Length: 327
Image (tube, rainbow, N blue to C red; front, side):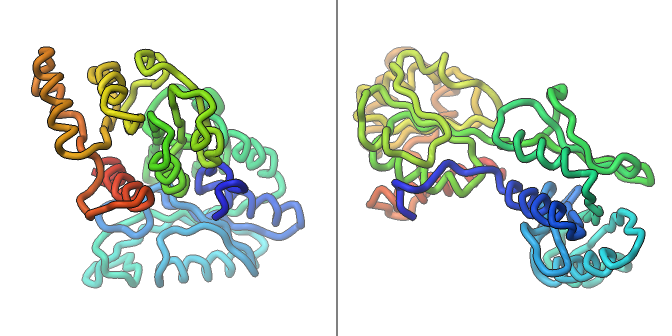
């Protein structure tokens, strides 16, 4: 990928809704498949989606034989004059007495097949728009109300699912997880490229105006020049906030870490050698920072894969973020 022509990532569902809109406008029937709930080692996780027509599809509900069967079922239902929503429980175990999916990975998932019509196009257009925003908007699928979008919804869980005859499902629209890279050097550029494929809303901050690796970073959604003493005002708190410190040097890393040590975020990590990190933590201990506060800092960041290049280091850091996010 050419870094001069790349662009910030959009949430993975964008292609699904774009596919639906293009086909509906062309008069082609569309089915929406959505995983409303999942448990265990299910290949399709809650919120996975795909859209299916007679000749094309976009997205995924987990792949394998299960997805193949649902795609064929959707295409069969699309040929019927009255396609009613279908909600099916799938158990990925050979010994399950009912609802066997044909897979043996031991998880379970609930899959919805929902017809989309031209009447849904205004809602789909609003969904596509809201996917790029940071508002509190929720997508709803219900047994009686079909597809709808609730704008400026009250804060709540990212997903909800109520099973039963009057089932309902909702999810927050847009990026759930937000990563802030503090320091916009070569590793930050490489990490931005990786995170652009991992459904993170991405901000890159640096205190050096005119830095080429900052200005030319095409993967970040937001780029700002800030003073590291002011980071507390620049980075929101919350359980879906991930902060990675990789500034120009030891002293600026220490300034940034001091500013954020008590900031409640999901992940706070510092890049550096073991010797550098040991020195930094020793300074903070001498300043009276408790072991409890230091224990929440991931340092040195990255899984141990003997990474050397900026690209290898970026992959090791991204792997650690995935491990934390999925824990």
